[in-house]
Length: 144
Image (tube, rainbow, N blue to C red; front, side, top):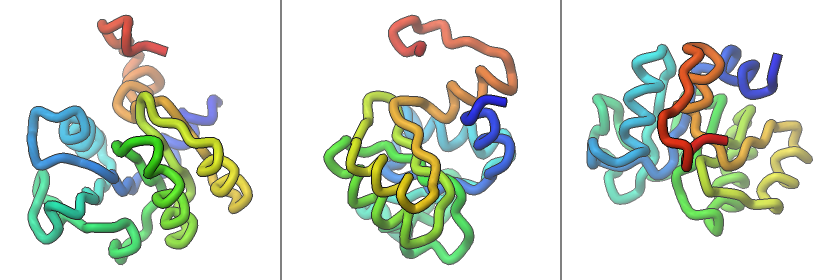
């Protein structure tokens, strides 16, 4: 089984860092999709702390979430990935997942040293569709 398929089969709670209040934004679409497929998603967005996104309370940091977080899914610029990785290690997450276009070798090194999985430049929604629904995106510029 591929590593990504294994991750999406085994881990069902996601802290989504950088999710937007705007329902048309990619991060919000991905959050809704993952919720629809049985994932518990904790939105993390400091500017929306205390509000709700898709009926979930918004946190300003993943370290504020009092429940188990398996996957830290990042919709923030690459330069922010290392700080998020440090928090992911602190809370004992299993996976640091950086969305399309996001990469950070220092974050990768940190999480792997802490026995976490590291995924970069991949979309959770697209990967879920590929492995579980056998759907390929119709946008060649976004495919892998």
